[in-house]
Length: 298
Length: 320
Image 1: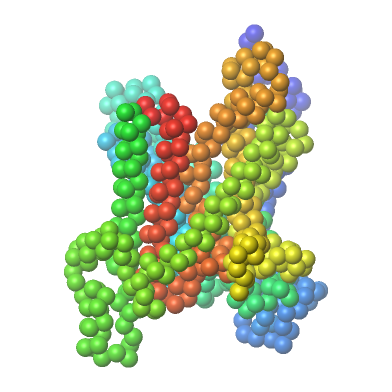
Image 2 (image 1 turned 90 degrees about the horizontal axis):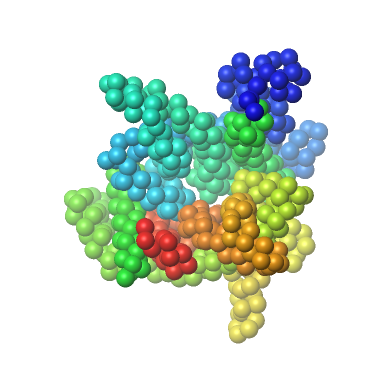
C-alpha cells in the first residue's frame, strides 16, 4: 500500500496538506496541540517575563519593617519573613537571579558541551580522550566541587554562572556526542568529504543540524538543572549577597530558625523552584514527543 | 583470566578518575583569585608572622613542588591541616564519613525496595492508571529540589505530627539497643528525603528496561512453556532488566552525594555534607578540598565495585 499523505484524516479535517509542511512546522503544531507542552511553555515564558518586569511589579525588598512573620494576607500575598520583608517581592526578584543564572549557565554549558561533543565525534583522534574526560567529569560528585570553588572565588551571579556551566557541560557533551557519532559515518557526509568539502563546511552544514534537536532539549534541561544548582548553592549560603534568589529565601528561613513557626517562608520559594523545573522538564518531554513522527501520528 | 583483565582495567580507570579529580581541585584552589593564603593569614599579622605561617602550611613553595608534596601526602593519607581547627583534615572527615555512608547506603537500599515493585507493576500494565501515575510521579520526582523535600518532611513528621526527631543523628546518653533505635529514628527523615530524590530516575529507568525485557524472545518462550506470568516477570524479565540498573547506580552516585550534602545540612546530620556546610561558613578551604577528595574517592570506589559486580553478573561485559 502506498502512503498518500493528502488523504490522512487529520489533513482532510484541517484542509491542509501535511506533506507540504516543513518538519519544523509539524513539530511546532504537535507541540502546541499537546496541553502539557503548551502549558509548560507558557509557565516558562511567564517566569522569564516576571524576571524582566520585576521592578515594575514590586519594589526590591530591603530594610526592616515591624510586620514580622505575618502569614499570607491580602497585603502580603506570601507573608513576611523574620525581618518583616515581603516574601512575594523576594520571590519576584528571586526570579531575576534564577532566570539569569539559568540562561547564562545553560548558554555557556551548551556552547562548551556542543563543541566538545561534536569534536569528539568528528575527529577520531579526539574521541577516546574526550570521551574519557566526559565520563570522568560525570562520575564525580559535582556539588562539593562547586561549593569549594564558589567559596574560594566569592559568591556573585557571574561566579554562579561560570561554576555551574563549567560542571554542567559534560552532560550536554555526552548526548551531543552520541547523537553525532552515527551521523559522522553517513553516506552524505562521506560524499561531501569526497567532493572536497572542508571540515568546517561539513561540521556546520551536516553535523550541527543533525545534533540541533538534542541541543534544544539540552538547553531546557540544563537551564532547569542550573536553577537547582543555583538554589542549592544559595541555600548553603553561597548565593550572590547583593541579589535575591529562591535559594536565598530558603537559606534565610533555615538560618533564622523560623521554619517551625512560619511555613510560608519555605513553601513559596519551594513552589517557585518546583514550578520552574517541572515546567522545563515537561517542555523538553513534549518537544521530544512532538518531534517523533510515530508519536505525533502523521 | 578475562575477569582479571577486566578488573585491572576498571581499577586503572578508577585511579585515573581519582588522579584527575585531585589534580583539577589542587590547581583550581591554587590558581583561582580567592587566595587560600589570605584565609590562613590574618591582616593584623606582621610580615614575619605571615611568612612563618605560610611556610608552616607549605604555601611559600613553587606550585609544582606544592603539587607533588600534596600528592605524596595524599598517598600517606594526609589531607592537610584544617585552617580553622588546626587538626588534620582526615581526622575531622573520617569521624563524619560513616554517617554519610549510612545515610546514602540506606537510601539506596530503600529506593530499590520501593522502586522495583513500582516499576514492575507499571511495566506489567502499560498505559494503566498505575503506569500513568508512575510516569508522572517519576518526572516530578526528578524535578524535586532536595531542601524542599527535606523541609517538607521535617515540617510534617518532625514538627506537625511530632513522630520523628528533626535533627542530629543520635540522642545523647543512650547505649546498647536503645542507641540503635535512636539512630534509626534520626535516620528516617534524611534517608526518606534522598529516597524521594532518586526514586523517580530509578523507577523510570527500570520500567523502560523491563518493558524491553518483556518484549524479548526468551519471555515469549517462557510464556509458551506455560510458565505463570508472575514467574515470567519476576524471575525471567526482572533479572535481566536489573542489570543495566546496576550501571545507573554508578551514574547516580555523584548526584546522590550532592543530595546528601544538602540533606545533612537541613537535618543537622553529622556527616561530610554537614562538615562542608560548616567549612563554608568558616572559609576553611582545607576541609572543603579534603571533603571533595574523600567523597570523590568514595564514589570512585563504589563505582569500581558496581562495575565489578556487573562483570560478575553479566559475562558479556568482561569481553569488552
